[in-house]
Length: 246
Figure (tube, rainbow, N blue to C red):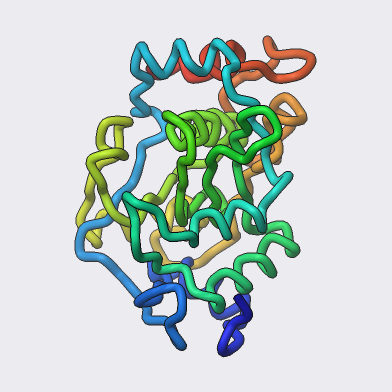
């Protein structure tokens, strides 16, 4: 769907850096509105809960997982209505704006494949050492959980500090997500973006693709060691990396 008006990428980046994000009333909505929740959902990267059943599923390589290989397909899948989600907040403006951010190297996706079929995944925005998770989708059992587990491993290896989930859901809560007040979130966000106590900023660095490069991250971050992982990544590698906290 083509956007009904253009949302400038720099406007989006300033909004996210301020703790605000856009939503739409539905897929065909002509405009957007800005949201700043009083209680913010976050998933502490050192508090991710990897259940025994999810650990077994990931280790089995039942699904193939990629990153940034089908961004546009993922965002469109997230925007589709489904039996468990008849309405969507992703309209044409938000979709096209995030595609532009992806082309700029700032928005990223994790894709979960069942054979050649896209079975689920997620997408979001990386800014400094913060990752703003936008939406996740599942068209096969536990596909979105697998995507989130791979994302957490990727963010930990890449030196990220904050995984913003926007709102806490029961689904996210089972995996370790919590709610924090707006003031607490603002402090966490400032730290992830590199703001000091006086508000001055030298934007912090993190590397979304560090997992692909086995832990090659900017000099100013401290990643989770990944030097024991070599060759093509497997589910067992991800389980091993998540084992630092799970």
